[in-house]
Length: 382
Ligand code: PMP
Image 1 (cartoon, rainbow, N blue to C red):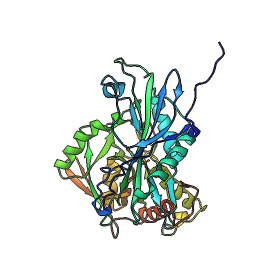
Image 2 (image 1 turned 45 degrees about the vertical axis):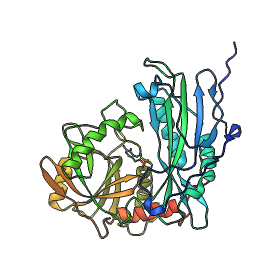
Image 3 (image 1 turned 90 degrees about the vertical axis):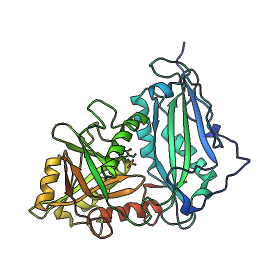
Image 4 (image 1 turned 180 degrees about the vertical axis):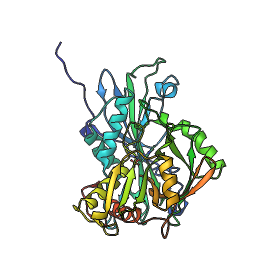
């Protein structure tokens, strides 16, 4: 017969079922990250025989799945995380949602979950956020954390591409990650466990990447460190910080400041904050868009390159290590002041209020764009 393609996600087919029991919105200062969810969620079913079904915005509540559903057995699950910000005039915006959709499709392809039209899901995310936008506290630093998720739901044991799947999106109002300003964190350079391996899944946002990190995180916490510094290979290459990407600032003998982040070698999650940080820093370095506060362009270089603990340790000793920080959606930028490594502590300088000379101007610009103080195409109106 003739080939007919199955339906993709179609925003015009959206059904909306409003809650009859709106929840009491908790006081903003009582919010714990990821513990409170809004009144509605978005669900979109998929099946191999009929493609993507009708999207639905419905009251937030339990999903009904068979115990045999593949997600429970083979971790056929992936997720995303992005935020909606309420601007001073009441306008609500998303930060680079196209990047989340692109990454979500890349994750789906890695575990044989179905692909979808990212623009269609952005349209539906906007509808969901509009529905629950009164949940975004009207206080600077607060936002709505959005969690798109895709799971295999086929009710059958056996490891193969699921014939049924469910995309759902839930939303959680969140406060500033560091309510008392930037608190530098201590990392434990983890040599007992690895987060990712060549040919593995470290560069995909799959749930399967996170469960094994919990024990390592707990052990680091027992030793008095806030997060793991994930290392790779015999030379202990720096990869990621907890669930953030890693940036290092070095000031070389010739006076040039170098901003370094490990390359996307298949073991690093392609973070959207990472990409944004690199873009802003490179625009400054090339003179395309000067960022006030950064070293002058002729004395500033940006490199995606491998960096080992040996180099970090040496730089800390000879005074060329200027900063070490993590980047991610939740905290934007997290300064690091200490790395426990092979039985000793490497101390890292931190600037006034926690952030250093390179991270501070980048943080200011990123947050300015996110909350709408700075107009920029990365900010998408809901
Ligand atoms: N690395 C890992 C392992 C993560 O889970 C995250 C959070 N998504 C990041 C880095 C940062 O990515 P993003 O800037 O897109 O939040």
